[in-house]
Amino acid sequence: MKICYFGIYDPDLGRNKIYIKGLKENGVEIIECRDTSWGPLKFIKLFIKHWKVRNSYDYLIVGYPGHILVWLARLISKKPIVFDALCTMYEGVIISRHQFGMLRIKSLYIKFIDWFAVKCADIILVESESQKKYFEKRFGKSPKYKVIYIGADNDIFYKDDNIIKKDKFTVIFRGKFLPEAGVKYIIKVAKILENKEVNFLVMGNGFLEKEVKLLINEMRPDNLTLISEYLSFKEMREKMLSSHVSLGQFEDHERLQRTIPHKCFETMAMGLPYVTARTPAISEILKDSISSLFVNAADPKDLAEKILILKNDPGLMGRIAENGYKLYKERFTPKKLAKDIIDLIKNDESGIVAKVDNSKI
Image 1: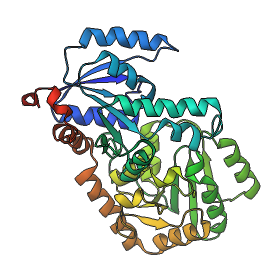
Image 2 (image 1 turned 45 degrees about the vertical axis):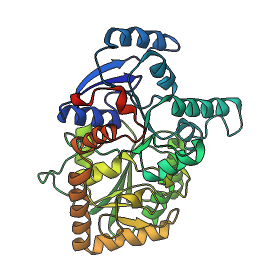
Image 3 (image 1 turned 135 degrees about the vertical axis):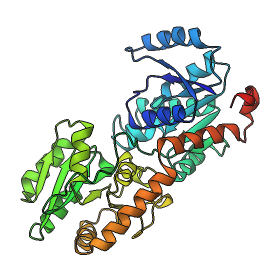
Image 4 (image 1 turned 120 degrees about the vertical axis):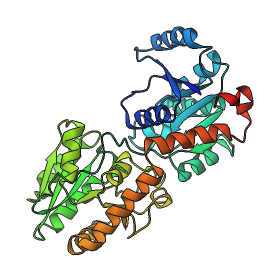
């Protein structure tokens, strides 16, 4: 099988890197057709680059993010179009980051981009079953929607017994400061547990960074450290592995109902216990008190109690970590996920595989 990976995607972004790596591990040849030029120029350059390889592949995957490019892929390619959507563009721009407002012209424009991308693609990869239901609600039921989880790159995120845990029990949050993350609850929990021999390490930046820093300055928990500068993957991995517990997302937020963040899978790949809000999406892959510990959304008191439960029960903490790691190895490595992509293409219900010679697969 030969696949053209097409778009403006970042090849080092988790989801793209994981799938490309996994496809190669499954023997798929990847032809990258990528351009990040400013404005309309990228469309012209992509057309030219694609023209040179137009007869050299079996399937075209529009890499993430690529919502604005699915129409172009449909226009210039005669092969089946697989769109790695993850979620809708509307969710990322409007629901998560509150840009443009809910009723402005740009919001309507983004809705149109999502709709047109769905219409133009043959297969649409989404991040969870909950996300699939959202697509069905917004765009109508279709066999196009396929669930492929994000996973983690095991060349970057892996168990390493050589890294020593910190002397004091430490929980770590790593991620973007987006509304659904609920970083404000972590700061509040740090204050609640200030005298309970629990340290907090918060690593991140982004949309709500100013608000996060203001709240830290206001509450002044002396057991919390904030790192907002860039860290290499090696530094980030070592800081996570030297901690005892990895924190997920905690806000009562619409976006959180459908998403499973990269760090969930990365935590599992490193053999760390994961604590996060109880949501439909996360419940698709993890079980409370078995492969994770769930808390009530937007509930710092419950989060504080669950952190103390793990601190005081090393056996439970170890079982959750080991069960999560086993689950990652069974289902969420790049090779496993890419095999899922290959299988769903081969067995697609909508019949697009009739467009290519399956003897190549």
